[in-house]
Amino acid sequence: MDTLSLSGVIFDMDGTLIDSNPRWDQVGFLYLERYGFTPPEDFLYHVHTKPVPEIAVYLKETFGLDITPDELSREVISLMDDYYRTEAIPKVGALDLIRRLEEAGIPYCVATAAERSHVEAGLATVGITGQKFILTCTEVGADKRFPTVFEEALRLLGSDRATTAVVEDSPTALSTAQKAGFYTVSVYDDSFVAREEEKRQIADLSVESLEELATVELRKI
Image (tube, rainbow, N blue to C red; front, side):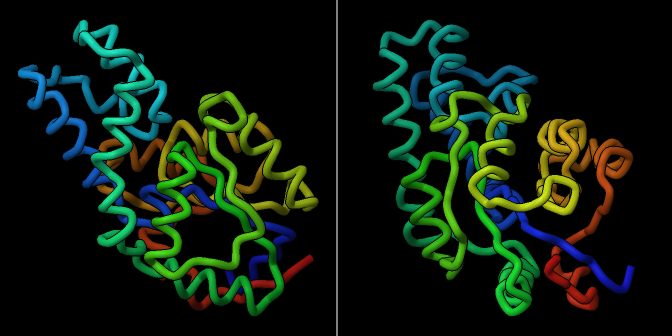
């Protein structure tokens, strides 16, 4: 591919723009250890890429924690606050791709399952500030098993569906966006190493890192 013509881009954050999934995995396990629980084998399946309120409900119902979901959510969010404010690092190639989108005049946004406070802090820490807007799954009331967050992002971008790229590391999110008619770009992340072939089958374009797009001409349409 020599040229990629786009009217807009919808980026995921964790695992796509910011290399934060390893820290989220650590936090989940540390949280359970705090309460004396051993995580089950399928623990990451239930918490990975999910909005914090949904994670809180899962933890309370599964482990019978004597704490409300709202209180639990605040504890989980607090555990990640310092990371996003001071330690977050970009995925390889992310900053260069953002710069090239801005030079080409292609509008982009961030649509994510992360909390808004984390998104704002994390993007500022890694130096991504030119997005048109941030949209969270919590704000639209649905996670990425549903197209709601992508549909609302498309509406706010005002771009064409078929030429709006959804850039994701999650196979679930890629599948949802693909079925909704978006152009999908799969980005490798260690968290989904066992599902990389599945992601390649779903996406219109698959890359090991965003750095692979460095030689592609980006054109606004």
